[in-house]
Length: 242
Image (cartoon, rainbow, N blue to C red):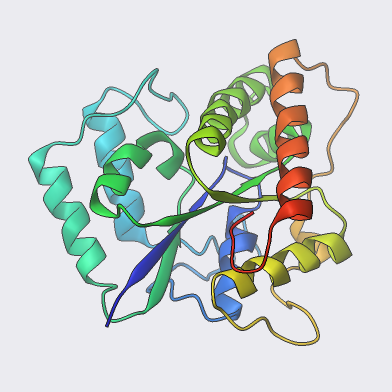
């Protein structure tokens, strides 16, 4: 059986769990993921072993999820073997995927092991992310905004280099569901009817404070992501990623 992978990308607290859980509802194989209600009411939908590998790669490069590296991370032979063992666990699935926000920081090593992987990205207003990280981690808004900027700079660069689906977690529930429906069909999955049930409005527990001052670079990145999401959503033909 031919097996293909979907890598779900996005900053922490930006809807990656909702995107992964929704696509799992449509038939995407996620494997053993955390579905317990912690800071996410329906679980973070992450495979702990994948997260452990991403953390190990970051640590080996003198970085962490909240102190991102300045450039690409080096993957050791041990990390590569670890990755390949994890990939092998999914080979029985025709289409499988995973999410962990750290993946944005170490993606190069994953793509070397998954050269044909498809990518799906999600983003959210930086002020909403900052509010969520303040509640979850106690981060000052300035630190959270800097993290949002560094993660989403990477996401923006990936949009220039790869075919990628892009969904905004700020979209209305109706629009978000429509985007999920289209993405699922393009992936060859079967969307639930009449709509996805994984997403619920209470998953957006941190409304953005639009009065929070944002650096010009952060505002520009958010605007570019909005435009890319709009453009790809409107222009995507059947069978093609947005």
